Image 1 (spheres, rainbow, N blue to C red):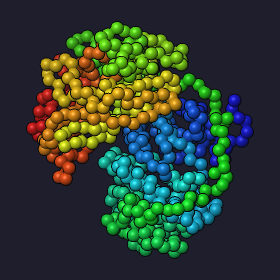
Image 2: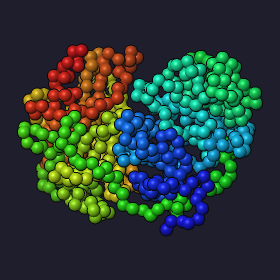
Image 3: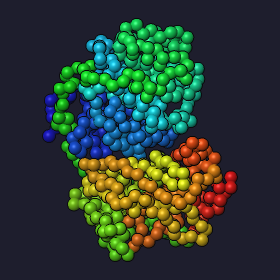
Image 4: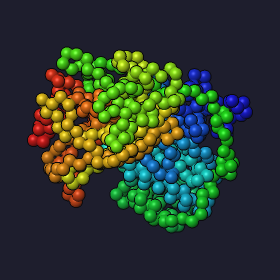
Length: 576
């Protein structure tokens, strides 16, 4: 029953029109709001406290903004560090897109300094190292934070936590969010950014140094004033570090150098500070002792499959859930979620290699005992499809839809397959982040659910595949364990080439093919991975990975003529 007592400290009441549920999260208050959206206080299915950022409705209809938000989610997924809140889930395709992380109790550094004064003693060094460690993780994921400031760091009982990747982005995706304006907060912007240069990892280090100086002294290294006055000091004046003790003062002085090339990296700042003894004591004890049972404030649980109310459509681009082939309608999947008697049992309820279930909706493909009644028919008679996410081209989505190809569908799992590396023999290793999207049942993911295709000839009707060199069950997903990470290794048997090449990797759970048959060439559940031969590293003999793209499965006279591994297209790519 929902509590009628005052809300937990720092939580404001919901406003009229605010949602009560977003995905599996039950919302009961506001933690803050900004230009992009509102941050809600919530609990998940396990009553864990969460902060759920929801995009303003005015932005949700903006396709470009949705694309930026989808990329933000991909960035947050990549970053793992003690000083960064744990990612809990997201839905970038919902009517109101949202992102959830663990709730971090505590004051922001800005508020702490205003209410309690600067940090003291060892807490300053613990703070400096913690934020630097967060930047190491952020930069290792290919992200530049770009807005590190006192309002974006919370002093939790465990130490500092770096927040708000709302304008963070992968360094290689800079063109997407470039608007011609300066991004950041005056006083925490590096000299090179004021000069029109793009923000880099060293720009974050500059902001880190200013942040640590503020934590130690209560004022920024370039003082206060109007934006123009502060900018002039940043560009030409020396920083004021009075009150910062050595040896930290010398490190901050180097990190505030006007020349980014002379600043240390985040990893070098961590090494310079060195191991520290003792724990962080900067958070007020009220936060250390306040573990309110947020579930008592949250609305009642409800059955919430993450549904998108989108019709299964016919259309172009290779991303649709049904295709026209040979003048007739060819459904992507013929395997039912229950029943079926195909060879090898490769429909739900059957067995895969060595008697293992092949990616069923529940244990062994059976109908989950806790499936809501309103979706029982969908589970008994529906079909499973796989297609790229419309808002994230390096992600595949597994969906349950009605057999007739219309009506509602339920997205079941998302597979982020963006992270990958190459070996010297042109074999890719793909790191997959899987996210279960329902609040009932479970789903098993197996190695034999994935396959690589090197080439599709014009006369081919089915895909010729190479199995992943990773055995057994890769993940068991459920509402209690909704995320997992695993690696897929494919061996091509080739040799490093200075010519460009491309391979397609597919997610083909047993339910999407009839009787264990190979998928047809129009199957859309794949991504393209480019081997950029001309970009090979001299030291390792492999190219840097490039962002995967969706496989274009649109058929023309029975062939995916726009597909990346369609033979004539591969020949053109290889021959330059």
